[in-house]
Amino acid sequence: MTGETFDLEDERLKEEIRKRGAKRVLIQLPEGLKREGPRLARMAEESGALPIISADPCYGACDLPFYEAEVLRADLIIHYGHTEIESSTPTGVPIVYMEARAKIDVERSVKNALEYLEPWSVVGLSTVVQHVHELDRVRALLNAAGKTVVVGDAGRLKYPGQVIGCDYSNAEAISSDVEAFLFLGGGRFHALGLALATAKPVVVADPYEGRAYPIRKEDAQRVVRQRWVTISQAKEAENFAVIIGLKSGQMALDPALKIKRYLEEAGKNAVLLAMREITPEALQEFPSIEAFVNTACPRVSFDEASIFRRPVLIVGEALVMLGRAKWEELLEGGWFKKFL
Ligand code: SF4
Image (cartoon, rainbow, N blue to C red; front, side, top):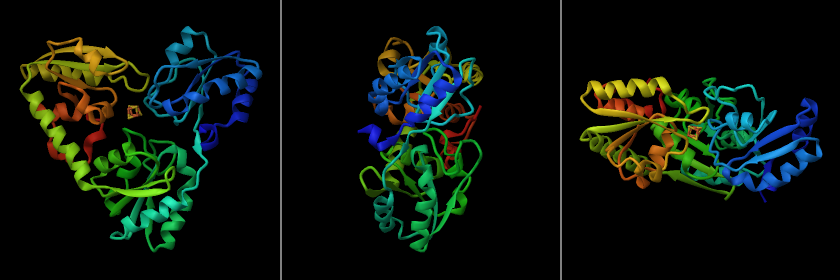
């Protein structure tokens, strides 16, 4: 099913292995595509390399298996589903990105989105890498409906208009020029991030389901209210832990050290925790800690807030709590800004 929905570039996989003379490849797939692993591994083996599939979770290009490749003595990493990001510093093992472009039609979902876009005439376009090749088509469909379309390019991500879970710089670059955004893609994760990052109305065109729906203002406001409550709770805490992410593109050691110092200057106690997966179970092992500051993936704090029993602030929120940043900066779309 996934092989039919996404272009996994089977021929390029074989070519890359042969061209590079790779002898041992580590194959990394995001959660929804892992089931394709055994098929891809067979293909890699036929091309002359010993394939090993990484079975650990992978949610982004911030989580590349460089260390695993070294210990497994792999000479090539094949990563599916994401594009490179600047924070993931490569080590010696080369990496090939397979973008897993979707092979599904977008027209029905975009046409359905027109009803929700009715109040606005200037629309920004955003999408994930799986659909970037469809942006021209979407632009034409919107133009035909009388809309002016803007696609942002801040130069941080590989493609204009592209977003990832914690980087909306392309949308932010055009936010003041547009009245609303159309997000092309499945699920609410990126669309909600887009609404928070731009503070603009967002309409989702979901090509997998062929339908469209708006991200209601209240949806974003509910998250914002919850974050304010979380900051207020953390303010009361005395004992903090600052989380340092161990994933390749999530490590923010210097910001974590700074936050520890700022907390201590504010009279709080602070320890450092280094971890890969930030889960309630892992945090429960530290019952004396009353609040956490997460310097790794910000979406863990946001999207999984309800599963944590204690506040897990992102960096910007910790700075607001400490009076070193303004709440308005977050409200105006600074949720994914690198403050430190
Ligand atoms: S949102 Fe989280 S998982 Fe996704 S790229 Fe950013 S840090 Fe990685």
